Image (cartoon, one colour):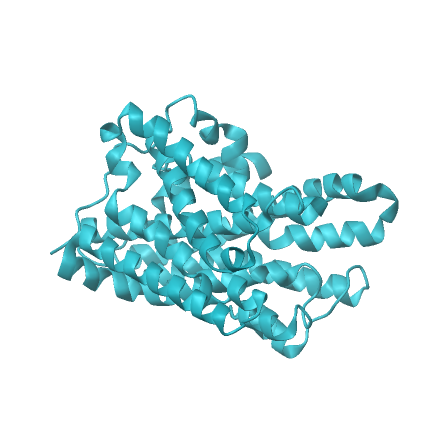
Length: 382
């Protein structure tokens, strides 16, 4: 059985998924504010969970669309796109952090293992083993990139055969079962006194959040369900998910915080993501598609990469600014640097177009995002 193609009739002009860049903007803002000194008020870990669920939803939606249109995945092209999108900003940030560390502008320095972990996506297990030592200050955020890349290594080989054998709904059930297995594994790790860092950052303990996004894309994708979404769903679903999310933030039981919390928050975020995309044209969610939110969302990956390094650097070099002033300056610098990195990443992807043309392949898997990036980032930064 082949997957039905994901309709783009509900997409905005240019193919971008309504509201998604706004969700990215919210996620990176949560992480930034937490790292800027507001961690007691802003749950930075929730921002990472939002990124995980969003990533699982988006990559599954893109894969469904390609499978529906082409009958399968072009794996070399898939991994080339990932490489061109992710590596140029990462290399720039790693090189800049190494230089800043060598010049004494930030604390810490790369060890050979730390550099390898940063560039080859095993930063989460390196950070767990070395307690953030072996990396320049601020690069600990790379742990979440490692989780996502481990997912990308396996998922493109898993999803197509699942779809052929079971169809989207039953494939969603398999992914949901895997989410349950990861939760059970996390509970077992807690019972065996695994460290909080391991439970928070290890791929085997956190990949269920990304799988949760895949479940949403397969079971009831909001892109194809927008016209079927009644007013009760549009009202009650976001309210219920927001209440669930608030409860997960207020409950401070140690067992819950290190085990069930991640599952509860992932489910709540998935529900809110459904509501945001399905109700993108409603007043409650229209602001997510505004130009400022879309602009910040397109830069979110580069902002995430460099913001903590810049926060550390500004705080160390200009201590007289205070926490608030340092955060404002770092925010301005982060936006500037992130725009430049996004421009370089876009240029790398554009330069790869001859590869797609020679192979008779249009990179439809990225069409939702490419036009938005080209239109907004290039317009704002050139």
